[in-house]
Length: 453
Length: 85
Image (cartoon, rainbow over all chains, first blue to last red; front, side):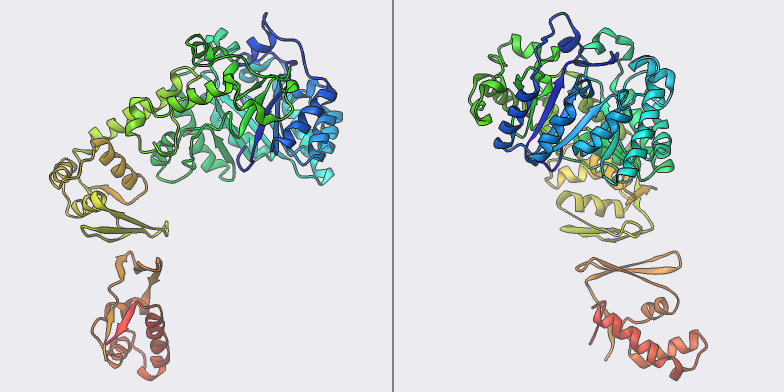
């Protein structure tokens, strides 16, 4: 979704040929209270026209399974004709020869195919018997058809990390290399819908972090060109980069664009700021009156902008704003300026990743403070009180530090112990916390500037 | 006229070479073999002395290496790693 002015996530159909055990939309689309009405083809065309007027330049098709709609290719073609980039999420099971040809012809720009394990048994246990074999066959067919067509379509694999597949995830780089796919999208489990009914799938954050760490290790060894798309907060990206001593993952902004440059459209045309607004995890916010009113249906709108002042979306924006940085850890987090904190509509666990990382950082500091460090042999230094410069020969980038960081480097150069360094900093009038010092030392250590004496 | 290392550089012997970093331009240079020897002997030294030292260290005729040494020192001056005072 990066690089687009405005994106619509479009659940274009509630129908699906599978019943995955972790499907977050299961309650909404397959449950007893499901809404059956779906926009017709001509209504979809009307929607696209409104979206174009509303400044949308990207539609990402989801569901259900988008390929269950017979008219999906015409919808994509129309959007493409109007200058909208269209991408799609599919479970891959319906990518037969005919559908592949129509999809390529329609002008689709990216196809994201779901696969939850490289082990057929584990994958099929989640997604349905025979899905692994079918999807792998279809991917090979898709690649072959694309090659003949001379058209460029990005293909990526999406996987959800859960308890069942956390061990197996390290096998993805090898399989993707064999398939000739160079993007792996790694997602966290949404704890709603079918996931709530299938508790054995659930995981804890430590398992997820460990799985991602191992995946990165293997990927670097087996398939370095594989691009890993991880939807993680910058604090998690920084933690993983520190563990590996290299910047493998971008410490990107984690800013919620829901209800601003990202919107969600349900199959019946109801507009939501995001997919979380109408899941069971948002019920608490609705009960407490933090999310007010009901969403508007796009068929009732002439212009998209008209919904901005509607009570439902105003209450959503207020909820977002009030929730920013209202957690204790957010206030002291080094990424405070580029991360909005936990999603107010999801369960507490999303915030807990920050707790896990902070605990890890505290554990590191508790080990660090009894050590002495020295500058690494391949690092050039110019250290004084005001500004210090470090240059690692194999990295080739000059790093500059001033204020308390420069002082820390000076003390390290003099072989002072970390506990003494911290005392000296406080005596010098620098009001920094142990965690801040720990983070700086971890960065220096993990990125190869200092090592233990 | 003698040569002096610029105060805008950081240097460090690493393995079998000397790394020289120009902090302002953020360019780093690896000096090996003869270049390393010249660098180690350049501070407050004149050209003819340096030429003499190199010819003795590497057992070669002064006049046959004069041009190369001149060119190297010229490059050091051009890149502002040294100054002539």
